Length: 494
Image (cartoon, rainbow, N blue to C red; front, side):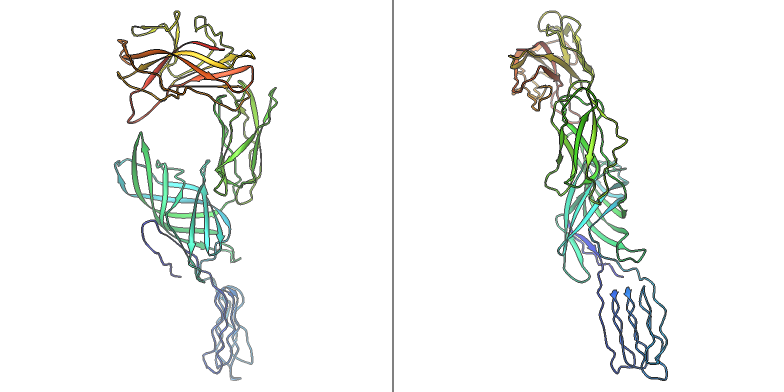
């Protein structure tokens, strides 16, 4: 079989041979007629020799010519061979398969790309040896829709068919696929591919796919993007692996509950959480993306109680109709309760959960605590989480903040704090960044400049007796603007 590849930027050629039976009548031609092509074999008749049997499908029959004995007819591949008729030559043996491709119907494949970087731009140390993912194909008229994914990613594309009996498929623009496996690239796009579908057991259904092609990919470091061009070989076997879900560890109350599917799953799938303790809510998680034909992630914005535990339940399954395998998943455990904050300006031993270099301080360089003798200090890559009790009439979280800059005049985004009501759905944060002028020299080597003290109010729109707040200045890696740390004091609910 010959594969024809149409080359070009952003063009993907997928070649699958589809053949139908035909009948040729030899009439008085002494050579005999030819049998059919794959599927139903044609029948050759007349002449002094046996006809040629059909290819894959039912073999064609050769009808002998004269009674003096024709030559043997060639048997069909891979079913029955030619037959004897009218004392012609004896039928030949059934032929074997000839390596022809078979059509790709709707199917899912565990797919691996073996990758070789042929060119990289901007960086020479990219490693990308392989990517593995689930590939689902679905015929749509002459075209073929494609969904690929792994670990929450769902990527879609489409191959346009040419409508011929031996169809070719093309993709423009190029088709994205996951960069998942032994590959540092964060995104990958197939630009060219010749794909072959094989049927080793001869049942007419593809049981393997393989191909070769070209791809491009991107790796982001800080705010700089590096690109690579790649060659690859593709291998795929039928998907027989049940989908599962990831479970976050030490879930923070203010983080959305996010479960990633190991492969794209059907949009009729559902995921719920059931409390293993005193909490009574049973949240239904929403599936995303909503317009791709499959879900890769499930989310809930419910602010879960400190210290609670939740069992994951799921119905449905993947695009190969395999059900979820989640029996061994551990429950989702929410961050332990640090205890109620005394709302006394950090003067007593505070109840709070700290990460990174966050701590209670009496000063930063020559800058003293904002009020009293102690303040909360939170630098980038750190956080402080507090649990506050709320009176029924209280409608806001208030605190005093002071920005500490690594460079005089530097600024930072307003997303340095977030608060919400436990059991609610809404998160609230500051609407403005902390001011950096007028600035004060701190004489601190890491944070030499301090902005003015500012009063900040976060309005609560949901009811509930418990509030959670997290302070976490934005962290940045690579080429970044000047960073900002925080001093916090006078935290209370009013």
